[in-house]
Image (cartoon, rainbow, N blue to C red; front, side, top):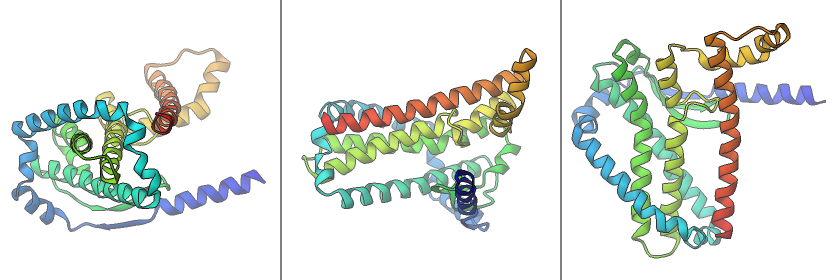
Length: 271
């Protein structure tokens, strides 16, 4: 009974993965946006401002975290409104995340081939931008393009926390604090490479290792090749060791992520 159900679930996820709304005529839009001010995101001044906002946000977040249960209590009184507003605001920043990636391509003289909406891995609705043209640029350009999107979440999260610290207790403060926490979580998840999802940090990792198909190769090795090595008592090669390390770290990271989120929820509820 389980196998037909699992096959049906897998078919649903695969079908959802094919849900895509996109356009391949976006290069002129990104070029205009870059000339209109997007270029400022890639200046030393932007780095200084971003770093300052991050420090301010984290300093502001300390007292909010200490009194987290009280700060987010209004969400419990208006759960539907709060969840819809927080999710909507976050969803819009996912689009902004991809726009920043596109601006990075323009900054390095590359072309944005496509921009759109999809359901990542069949369960995660998100926006995307085709950045494959950046692979023709330098490693520095590839790294900057990869980290530019996640850094937007870091700055936005810091701004939300700083704003929450200066708001009176109520739904608005709770919304700002929750939005800040979600943005910081998105920053970490985007840059962390060990979570079985090919996010920005994963692309930086495979670029550094020179293993562009790390995830599928690692999963295939653990499912098939690893057990033959164990049975034959053969030592792992460097590449096989990287594959195994990736799977082990990813599995441990997913478990830690779930545990941290459970602990966070308990902290917010109990205080």
